[in-house]
Length: 224
Ligand SMILES: O=C(O)COP(=O)(O)O
Ligand SMILES: [Mg+2]
Image (cartoon, rainbow, N blue to C red; front, side):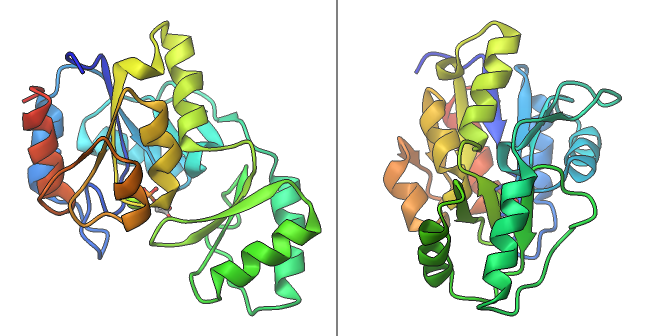
């Protein structure tokens, strides 16, 4: 890929360590990047917009795994996912498992659950329920999402608004919830300690872990 025109980057496990604290080397490197850096996360919108502001990257953010996009810090959430079917799905899962909701009062497009039940079993149950939802593992939480939502679809939405192709973006991630993102981008990168499922879909797998891998990727792309 020639120099990308934008960079979409995951937060947890990509620019953070496993305990979710920021890798400051990645933050310093991202601040040097001259093209728009779009955070693309499963986290809620107030978390994502604050993280973007504090890290010092673009105000354009993808939140709730693509269920929400925002174009400015003071702007509105654009909701791309239907939370009602995700809530119905959660009600069904409640009959089988002791599920625990995360950030429920803030989520607008999806349901986030603690990773304390067997996801493959849940997938089968939701598949049979025909609710048009999917359940995705970020490595930090399980997310019940509208089937049409993904970080990749949100990147396409943002690129369209910016008048550039999503293929002119590079993307970096660590988990299953980044697969569609790295596929939508022109160049998909997995950090060294990424989930195997993501590594298999990536164009490039860097050798270093999380934020150190981000610095390695930015050097490789000629962005720093
Ligand atoms: O919200 C999560 O579960 C993890 O968030 P991430 O997409 O930034 O890794
Ligand atoms: Mg992640």
